[in-house]
Length: 413
Image (tube, rainbow, N blue to C red; front, side):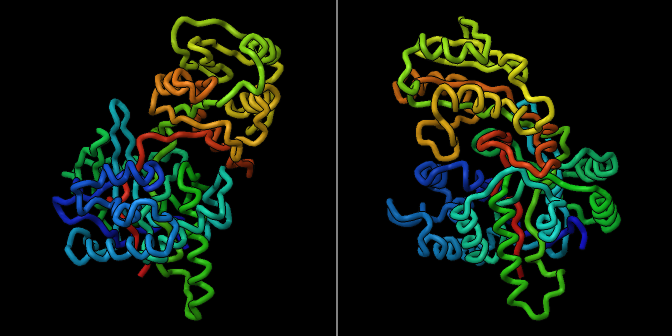
């Protein structure tokens, strides 16, 4: 099996992409999705968040929700809002958000290579979230949420992608969040073969975002393999929908923290305790860290700059050296008593796309006692963790821009 292969994509009919594409299912809650889909009968949110078409308060994991998603999917197919391409293609996909641009390729990636760790992971998954994605894939008999992958840049791949992207795009849409999504179909057999060979020559790919979607695809494939006495390995269920970008174009934003209380400490006691691990400096403006080992602290209307003391930075551990780990191990656990940030209800996480003003807002409102701004994790650090077979702490990376749901889907028949 090849690491990647082309596939017959299911896409919005010509001229319909603006009506169809939607944010990923997991970046909006149900109420936000209802608002975004209002007056948009062909929005992919009716498929990815089908509870918006059912009574308020319904359990989003109930059987009725998956059935509604299947009904809405079929309705869009029957109406011709979504159409399947006549042959297996790759798709060149460009995202532009402000001054940032990244161009990658939409593929079907190998489930066996995911299972053998050639497609490498850096996060734990939760069984309940895997279950949700398995049920969604089975209900639609399709993978509609792409997994976000990255690879160490290849000039051979760059050359082919650049050739394809010189043509007139088939989709060029600016979504309501201002992100521009542009798509080209790669139909040329020679280009397709060259791309396949270039990726087959790579030692590995890395999951940037989409660990639950890839795990769910693996579970669906295992079940279908077991149920298929004529299994060959070529069936569509042996591959999962992915978009792959080169590492030098990826953009990771900061993933910040807010905490409900100071663990029984007064402000001066708290600042005194953290001074054992950090150099603390009062600042007159919001602190956006400019390097690793530097953090911003917002407390009672005041910003502080924290620089971790060098002896606190482990020499060779790719996980413990991460800023999210340094903050956790030197402050969150020993001072604030937050031992498990994955489950502790006293901590919340704020994506950098929301800006430092969101940290100030949540503290000034009284909802939270303090906030911490972080320097973004690097792609190189993420790859180092994955290469070591380890996992990153929760909420270590926030990738922007986000992929669109509904732009290209992968049918499993």
